[in-house]
Length: 435
Image (cartoon, rainbow, N blue to C red):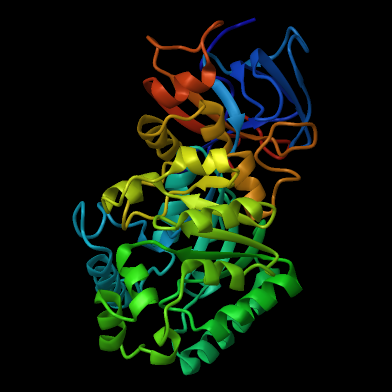
């Protein structure tokens, strides 16, 4: 067998995706199916864009991908692609969250005039970047019309329409925009969709109740930012602080909502009848709220964005404790407004350096657990017969290759890497004809 890091492939210009024609049997130095044991010198048989068999020594004529670790395509459950043209995050490390929100508002205002010529540009750039760094599925928070998302094969999308309506009047306007979004969904080649009532300070309780009812009726997931900063907790407890002032300046203050103290727990309970919920950040949830999420893990997932968390210099995230309690935690990239890039594996590597966790647990947070959070557990996030034939290839540096006796997961989370790729096997692709 010819061992090489290259194989006959094709790539569409600019999309960063490596394609191999099927039927084919692939071989990698390590295969981590994220279900069952790791396979050294593992092989995968692919037909019609699906995995049909995996094991060792399926054939002596496998297409060898070289000294890499082959994973199911990575799943990023939380991203804001509209910021993808930013070269660096807004503000500075340690910026207060309310100050950062003000910069987001100003940046969005400046973009309305400058992006009129090519409104899809940030989404196109973000999708290409995510695919080039190994992401197969991405959960996008969309605050614009659906037409802003360009046609793209990779990564596949689950699109959450963002709901912003802090007052009763604005809540009704948000519902109308969502209804318009619903009408466009059938025309889109997305894996799925959902709703994202943004946060306690931007969503009137009536709008959240409507979103929960829509989630239950249409069987789609919700994403909700909660307990993201101390300023948010002050607003919920006392109705005061910098977020309250920001809302007043924006003409979005609704005093009835903050007339009495409210805990994040009550917002969690308000969503308990939704079909599925992704709670984003949760940096300042209490022990009681952690227990609630653990008890509701069939419905709730907690999305942790490690590098965004570090950018704001929040208190240390209790990641190991959450996992030990049984909370389903998954990792996301948030956006280039608060993180250096859209490389999901780098989020896991950053978390591995900061938290003492089994590497396989961290990898599940960006594969099978993330797929479950999005409602895609039947096909994505694992390498099993019937799964889509799209994989993330991780090539460790030549001086730290995974080898018998060395944990492949440990190597790709703690070792030096040469590159990360998204590999797609499709019968429609010819090795000599780019798509």
